[in-house]
Length: 250
Image (cartoon, rainbow, N blue to C red; front, top):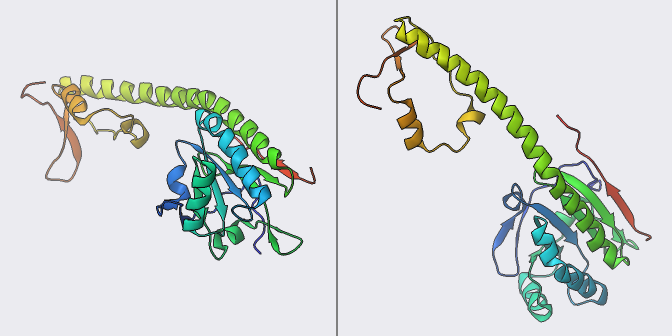
């Protein structure tokens, strides 16, 4: 068994079939949403049914908080389909037949042979932020995961604000250089064009808008000597273990 994944570790990526037959990759679920990934022993057993129903009953709350719930066991996709239909489960169940993904996460076995019950909260960057391990504290898997998901949701506006401030400062600096270049071109001087940083170019400005805004200012050209210059455009314009980790800034 591999070392168990802990809070602060990167979540191992994987692809497994769901109850609908769709191949689901963890990486594809991250980015926009947090993932609550819970491993459980077996469909239609008492504890696993109670846990699935608890996640079902809180599913809307998880969704509103920006999280996807995914259950994983060694049952087949067909068995998952019957389990989900019987109990009205609105979330994804994945078939880890052979236990490859369970082993990758290092999910421990109870009494050495019963597949363990462990829940991981994985943030949008793919980092595990919380681990809850208990065979019997069913409610703890749901309540603790939801608490962490809500905290991650609260962190998002602050994070977006910091990123926005950083990008705004870079944009002001780049526009200052661009203004100097335009003045130099107007004076007939030869200047070197500074490339737009990729993270500023990726701010979702439509190409047509960028083209229109750039008309009448300057265009980049490469002369016969291979030197980059510009020239004017002149055409138009319990018993449980729980660990939570924080990801350091920077």
